[in-house]
Length: 300
Image (cartoon, rainbow, N blue to C red; front, side, top):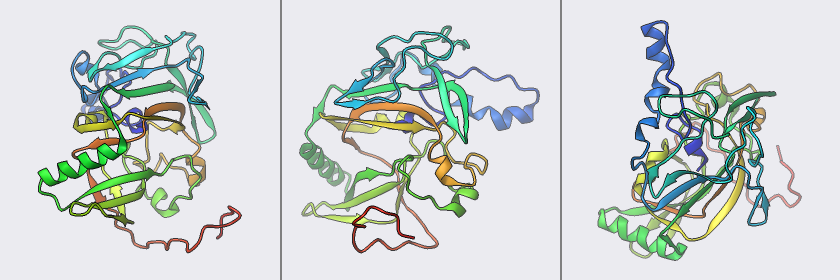
């Protein structure tokens, strides 16, 4: 979910840049080309999905929301509820006081992001709710997954049960980080538990070396189902991602603590009929631990 607020094609306003040369426009204008302002009042995702910003909401399902705030850094008080996407149709974008071609005023989402020991002002998501008007039980979603795969004459389907949190404290590959191999700004988090599902008997096989392709808000057009239950999680969202050697500092543990404080209230399962899953080619694959560490300490 947080990838929808991290990449170039996201739910933020972007003012069209002014360039001093054609060369600067060629290298820097790509982000604006993916701006969603041209899609206002048009269908951008599945009509089953509604996305709202609930900036002032402090708690949900018994959890404190770190993205909550009463007033933004420009002194604008946000609405308690701002509908961004209504049944698949884009209605608004998160904005600050800088006007753009179609968004003339702020809706109170100018916050801050932590970046390598600094605090930088930026448009932030705050608290985001994603809901569906056609939710299903997880068991029904699993049956539908197998049906879709059979209809497409596939040999198997995939279930992703857990993604790595950027703020989990899991040690990153330092060499990959320094070489800029962390993925693009629209990349999903690294999948931790990916299962290949047999279409014959429904058995599952754990896949170790899988990675996911880029994800923008438009991937939700391919959503064919969602759970009727929701869950809440807090995170630090990074707009820049780790697609170049300058966005990831020397120490990845510092990078994991960078980003915009945000909270998400989302379905606890989503079914896609098409999502890119690739083999994660690694020079060295670390061995899995034989047993769980009984004291919870990191063993070098």
